[in-house]
Length: 421
Image (tube, rainbow, N blue to C red; front, side):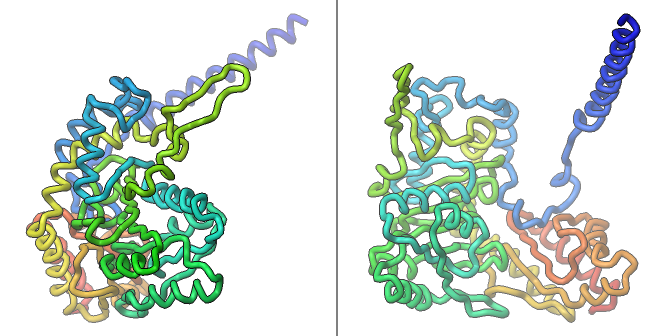
């Protein structure tokens, strides 16, 4: 019996030692994490440019990086009612900025869309169809699917511009009515799409929705915080923003804006009561699971960046950012085998180009499609997806003119090296 105990003890000690060694590996692996990408390189990844933190946000991040740090002075049990730091003021100011009645934080723009579709489906349970543009992000489809609804797409005009026409929205609305005897539950427009960076004017779509009395949701994931948006003027009932994508905030955080007529649908207070304890939570919002999960870094960095957001969406700065994107395109068009996808001139800096010339080089290059990313990185530019040479997406948003010209020159140098110009 003693031998068995010793054997078990020996095995136990070996397990402990293995765990100790494993912990040392963990320390080595995780304790020195760092990222100096934006200091050492020009990052042209379109999903990141609008979300880069401002100096003020970096400073706030240090103080509020802890998980529930915003809740230090929560006196009313709700994130949106915190006065210090001034969360309640920020939400009011943000609503004024977008010119919509109410703004609430969410986990992301996708959560904003899901929430809007959920509350509308409860409000109008007989309506089962949501109309979306055919350039919509996959999360728009998933928001519809997760609520057991159906989707109808508005076609675009195809290659090379992929334009959306307002008349096609109206036709799709009429087709839904002919098919079901009901107008759709909601119309969703992608303000700036993720694929081609096309700017789609919400004004005519808002007017069509108003004509047929259909709620209108603007997906502003790439535009809120980059382009000016006046929801009242554009007849927008709901707006979904991605603050970590386009509002210089640490992720994940989004915003949902909504008109006052939908306030009672979204801000649903809890009515449940425990059968034994009689617990109740009347201050909590059911649709947001009490509070949106942005208790520290996400919301505080968004608040700290907000003055910059307001400044950078003024007319002159928006114009300059568009000029930077169009400058790059004007220069690289001379490269044989490059075609610009999407509408021109660019309004939003997200750009997609078809790079048949680089695809042909990749076929015989020893590094295959990886050569292009490496050529740019060697010139101080990162953000291209590895191994892809057929298409290239980039954004010049927030780059200085010197950085824009460096990126352009890098493009031309690579093309010259491979005898494309």
